[in-house]
Structures are given as structure tokens and as C-alpha cells.
Amino acid sequence: MEPPPTPLRFGYGTNGFTQHRLDAVLGILADLGYDGVALTLDHIHLDPYADDLSQRLTALARSLNRYGLDLTVETGAPYLLDPRGKHLPTLMADDDGRRTDLLRRAVHIAADLGSPTVHLCSGPAPEGLSEADAFKRLAAGLGPVLETAERYGVALAFEPEPYMFVDTVDKCLRLAELLGGHELFGITLDIGHAHCVEERPLLECVRLAAPRLLNVQIEDMRRGIHQHLEPGTGEIDFPPVLAALRALRHDGLVSVEIQGGTLDAPEVARRSIEFLRAAAA
Image (cartoon, rainbow, N blue to C red; front, side, top):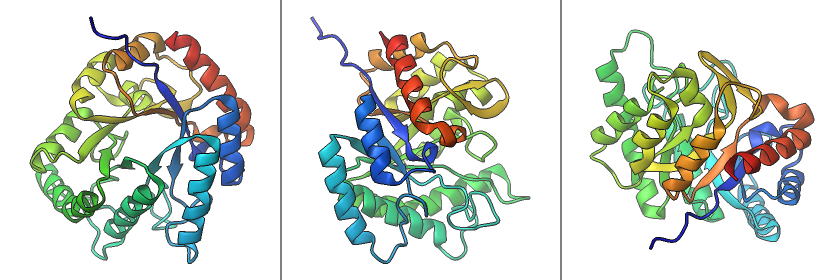
């Protein structure tokens, strides 16, 4: 007889706490009972280009240990590389290597902090580029990043994102095929995003992503409207989704991502975990 699935482990994204210092964020999340944190690399909490990055990583590792929090590293800060171009440059048009460099830095940081994964997304395809060529460029751009991932044993968790080139689980799986089914290439499934743009039912998206599922992001959303909402304030029926993740024995973080709640972040985080715990019960 198989043992029952272990409880889901909830995290919270630092991009929902942009008014707080990072150590304060960790303390709040630990006090609320979160299991981990999804850390967005940016100028606010952890700048991957800071001159004193090594010292910051040492201090952060100590804080994570003190608070008992797990970590996943995210690279979705929209204006980190280009202050005028959202999510630019991409691997599909990264002529100067900035995106490649950022992702390699993220892998190093993840290894230093004990994160098993680095989250990334495609960004928009260059105007006029065919879908086939965009896939080829994206796969080629991921090659050197995967080499670094192999060196450090950190997996890349690719997220389908609304209105980006890779916006569905199907496209993510196509990219995995172009990468030869690389064992360190997986999926971050954002539940709200899937509800927003996928033609498949949400539970079918979970099933389709399952073989490569590394991370889950979670929030509420309305069909066709890319706006992150607190769980329970949109259209998603959460108990079946959480039950499906438990049935898959998903052991990565299920991280709340609500960027719009930063001015009331502690309360948004409290309400979110209370809702998700009740929905998962």
C-alpha cells in the first residue's frame, strides 16, 4: 500500500514584497508558516551584478538557514537588463550576451544558496521572426546555460508566460524536445497563467506538465486577463488543482506570485496561505 502524498510546500515570491528589505521578507514568511521563498534577482533584494554579491550570498544563506526556508531562484525581473524594454534582451535576440550572462549568474547563485532550480521565461520573440526560427534561436541560446547548469547540478525550470513567445505547456515541451530531452530542463507551471491563456482545461495542463514539473507558481486569475489576483478572488477552482499536485507527489515549492499587493504584502501573504491551506485540506 502506497503512503499518502506528503503535504504541499508553499512559498511566496519576493516580487510581491518590493517595499520590504529581504531579511524582513524572510522573517514575515517564516512567521506565517511558509516553507520557502521564490527569490527574484533584481536591484531590490539581490542584485546579481552587485560588487559585494559574495558577501550578500553568505548573509542570505545564513538567513535562510535561520528561518528554515527553502529557496528557488527566479530571473523574471522585467527591467533588470534593459530599463526601457520589458524582458529584453531575450535569448532569441541576445546579440551582446546579456541574457546568457544573467542566466549563468543565476545558476551560480542557485548553487551557492542550495536552490535546485533557476526559473526563466522566453520573453517576446523579435518582430518578423518565424516561429520555427524563434524556437531554434531559443534552443541554441539555452545551450551554454545548460552547460553551466550541468556543472553545478541546477535545473532550469522554464515558465510558459502569457503574451511571450513560449506561452503554453505545449510550447515548453516542444522546446524540451529541441534540447534533446535534457534532464536538467523542466517546467515551472503557473496556475493563473494556464487558466488565463491555455486552450486545455487547467487540470489537463497539470497532467501535461507533470513529467517535467519542477516548480509551481500560484495565484488567481480571470480568463484572458493577465492580472495576478489573491487566491479566491478570481475564477480558479483551487481544491482540484492542489489535489492534482498532491497526487503527482510534487515536492517543489508552490509559490504565490502577486506583484500587485506590495503595499499590503504581509496581509496578502497571510490571506493567501490561509486560503491555500484550507483549499488543500
